[in-house]
Length: 213
Ligand code: B1M
Image 1: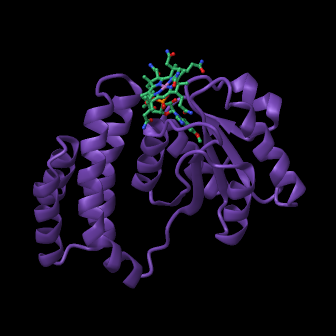
Image 2 (image 1 turned 45 degrees about the horizontal axis):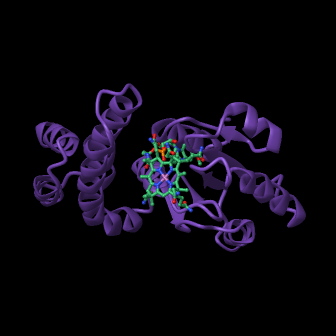
Image 3 (image 1 turned 180 degrees about the vertical axis):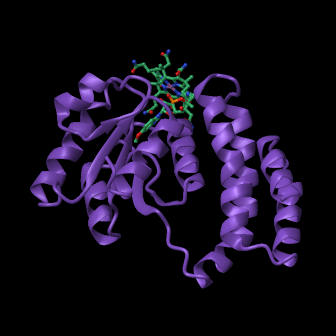
């Protein structure tokens, strides 16, 4: 359907206003909300995510595409909940205590939302207790920790320990990432998954939420 292609194309170009108009037009034409989401918005965001992973587009392009997606998705949200389409899952995300870098964390959040995951954003400077308390109170399947400083990375280990202490370690996955974080570090602290970029983080989160990882 060409209007869905138009949504997909314009989203990639970050044309938020046009995307919003096209989504409204698609709704008015009676196209199913889930179809608009999957074949229009998410299809576009998937392409942007792949290009970002391959260094074909960069942070500014991702941010404007994500903004376009959010504007389009805001029109679909009430329709999707009405028709009973469930979200893929729920996660909480934050940059760890002592760390104020949030650009990467925000990208991970956007990519996850683009994949249909509900994201509770705890912001920056998040202490281990807050991650765990939020995961328990809001039934999150995954705790996502971002860190950009070598001095704040160890807080991720404290999050793992806090989850163990609270008795939720077997119920909640813990994902870690950020420039200084590595696969080896992830293993060392006993977290479940390290990913190097936002698109891979979103893919891994979907796999965890669907129980296929
Ligand atoms: Co800061 N800073 N900074 N800084 N800063 C770095 C990180 C640094 C490498 C610069 C340098 O020295 N070369 C260095 C860290 C050195 C180290 O620890 N090894 C550094 C430092 C030292 C500092 C201060 C201590 C400086 C000072 O005050 N003396 C200070 C610390 C403040 C604090 O946090 N307490 C500080 C402050 C700042 C600003 C506030 C000015 C600003 C942050 C603004 C903001 O975030 N709102 C800032 C910035 C912008 C940077 C650089 C330039 C860029 C970081 C960034 O946003 N990259 C950075 C140097 C650099 O990286 N070139 C630097 C873009 C972003 C998209 O990438 O966050 O890596 P990134 O996210 C990626 C992946 O890592 C991954 O996905 C993202 C997209 O693919 N990812 C995940 C991220 N989180 C993930 C989670 C996942 C999975 C993947 O799963 C849960």
